[in-house]
Amino acid sequence: MYLNNFEYFAPETPGEALDLVARMGNKAKVLAGGTDLLIMMKEKMIQPEYLIDINNVKEFKGISYEPGKGAVIGAATKISEVEHSPVIRDKYFALHQAAGELGSAQVRAMATIGGNSCHASPAAETPTPLVAFGAKIVISSVSGDRELPLEEFILGNRKNALAEGELLTQFILPEPAPKSASRYWYIGLRDAMEIDAVNMAVNMVLENDGRTVKDLRLVMGSVSPRPLVSVEVPGILVGKEFNSELVEKAAQAAAGEAKPISDIRASAEYRREVTAVLARRLLQQAFDAAREV
Ligand SMILES: Cc1cc2nc3c(=O)[nH]c(=O)nc-3n(C[C@H](O)[C@H](O)[C@H](O)COP(=O)(O)OP(=O)(O)OC[C@H]3O[C@@H](n4cnc5c(N)ncnc54)[C@H](O)[C@@H]3O)c2cc1C
Image (cartoon, rainbow, N blue to C red):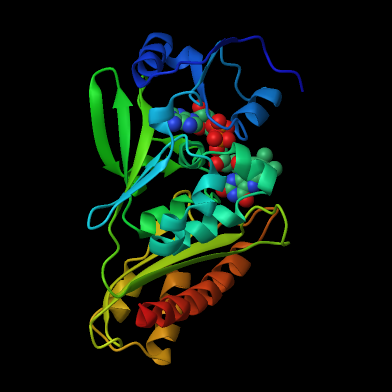
């Protein structure tokens, strides 16, 4: 379980960080919280020659919010800061819930929101609500920045769209629509420190009548190699008055869209069943909350 020898760099400005990433290319790994990276190094799955620690770059950290525009979260922001941010709790509740469920308090104090998406585990907690909010990411390099919807960034199990010399630097979350609410939850095999068997986020917008669904995103995690955005559920509910018959139809549709595998944590059949359970619960919870806004 020893780490290989590596050279350690701790840049203090975005320019220094991007320059190091450009110069060292594939021989380097970015170190954010290290809660995935150091385990992979200990298990000799990877043996980088250089580590570029981005924790001292203040421009890569923090949460800002501008009314009418939305929120920007730095990629090196700790999960615990996301969990405890009043803006995230008030405006992006599903992300607040997901951040609070990631690992333990110790893990949340180290882990970053950027590391969670870059590691691209299908069971990851925060990409699911972020995709439900339509979050975009900013990818930076010495040649400039580019933006991408998060669902296009996560390509599969431990695969993301970063090219050599690029860093994930920000998440951009749009301003929530009026009369909207979001909810997140997961089902795992135990309550503490488990890896999710299925997780899900719903972001629902209602018409002014408080009954008709105006817009909806339902995103499933851990039932496909990458966050799975439901196509069928909005087709069933958008433009209709919310009722339990449609919710049941939507829950079955979500279970049908899921592409789960069987592994040590759950069978594909179990995952499909709990997908319907989560969809039923979260659609109802998001609807009830949106009526209150
Ligand atoms: C005990 C334990 C429990 C856990 N429980 C959960 C859980 O419940 N839910 C969950 O989702 N995860 C869980 N995890 C996994 C892990 O904590 C998260 O995925 C975490 O968010 C990773 O962030 P990090 O900052 O530690 O990433 P790191 O380990 O530092 O990096 C992960 C990968 O992303 C790359 N990277 C990181 N940031 C950037 C960036 N800005 N630009 C480019 N590349 C980057 C790194 O080079 C590395 O390849 C757990 C881990 C442990 C050890």
